[in-house]
Length: 185
Image (cartoon, one colour):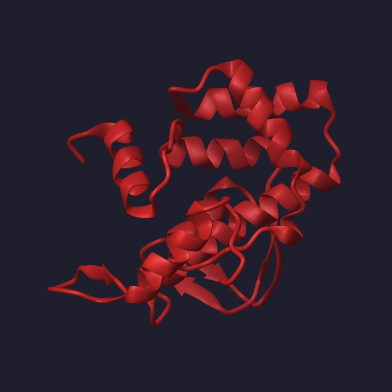
């Protein structure tokens, strides 16, 4: 909390064993604005999703979520036995759903600029210029979400409410570190 996004990137990079040169941050309003700027995101909710703290209230099935609903879905942790872990998994799933939707729209180079405009209105880019953001955006749109794995880092209970990395975490990071692809996880 004291080092900002740069220290966060360095800390995560040290844990995983890769250098993280760029950071994109947003807040709740920015997140909702980005989702609304996309016209919502379609999400297939696979388990009942209710949390009075986040405002999540979704039955199983397909939902076109606006920014407020998307924030509730992505913040829900009280409605699951594994709390924060399921929330993290749902957040990765939401990102993949958004990518699936964007790819289906088949945005060309000009439309990609519009998507960057949405990002620029609602997020802060750290160590990332607009030319690199555009190239990363085009690269991201070239990825088939079906080939992207959403993997939960293996953790167990530590002291108090803290989690600690399971021994399998080191193997996961080593698998990723060699070529940025998970072969065995």
